Length: 478
Ligand code: UD1
Ligand code: CA
Image: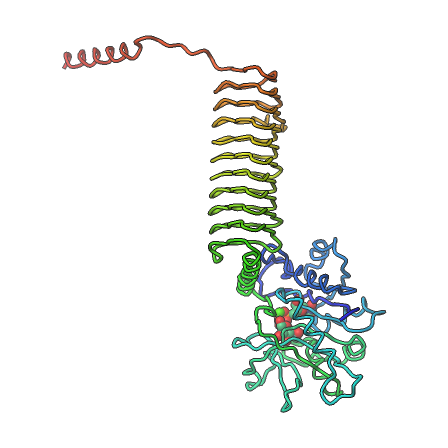
């Protein structure tokens, strides 16, 4: 299977999705549909990948501009056969086999493609030693063949044609072997036969599968690889199928993680995106969502209802229930939550503690620092072993600009204090509870802004006495 080229068919409108987004750009387990065949072809080392685009072509190109793909525009979309015809202009100087994949069939495994190559390269029945198949494809047996092309075989069990559902005779409609829409064809064969495709069918389209009949009529070899795992070749044509594929991908992702040493207590209630990496002996509790580029170390505990997006979690971390973490780094051995919100740009160093109802945004928090209760920390640079009391707020926004708060090592910020940025608290300084800090605080000093406490002796006693007296007066009047 060396030196093969590839075509991905992705020009279709995806009418059945009923969406303004091109079908191949829909996300599936956190990865765009079209990325599935693209990544598969990269893994298999296709020497050239041609993507046929049509609907939303600009959007599709933009999304894949970093990948080494060649795009051709198919406009209007006259069918899968016409799409391949369009792709041929990018394969002019190429020879050998071309693998044709659909942009809407995401779950195909590399092993299956390898098996297709084996079947394709095998000498066809009754042919001389040198000859190989002109075209091979993947089929599968299903009890729900609706929407797929039926595979028609002759008395020798050789494939003679593929008939689209709408063109089926009643007897053909009953066939349970269907076309998976994945083909491997000889480029020379395509060059000489694509022009022979006709539109004389119910949809008035150029059908790529009609090449099977053409090959057979010329006595050329056709092979089918029949796969057992139906989910591998399931095509996504509507949102119901998208959700089924989502469930199938999710099952695969979780299975691989569990077999790799991750405990997932409730797989049916765990949502982990494609590509998320998790270390050994980490425990993922129910209702956890891990989205995008998430890296989690080993021996981590992720409690119930946590959502983590595009973040890195160090080893030995505990993320307690219902915490939300986005675009952040959590250092090894730290504890976060329950009910914490860690927003983009936050870096927590090792062994830090972020407690309940604490929000941290775009801030660096030093090693061993604790922010345990009800705080807002934004645009701050916090040193090591700092203690931030309950209800402390960094006032980082003056209504126009954001400003930084700098808190050096070993500082103690008393509860319910506000730090009005820009402000710097020197090393080892103390802020008395309830202070509003507007000026820099020197290291090792105490800053305190609240008014001094007054104790008024017997004030409450006098108040009570006054109240009782007025009550008596009222009664007398009555
Ligand atoms: C196609 C096959 C059917 C097979 C099924 C497997 C044909 C005629 N039928 O049907 O035998 O069982 O796939 O999933 O091929 N596309 C283009 N340009 C076009 C039309 C389609 O690029 O003019 C692309 C689509 O974007 C899609 C793929 O080709 O990625 C398949 O097209 P779709 O319309 O989904 O074909 P099916 O009806 O599913
Ligand atoms: Ca399809």
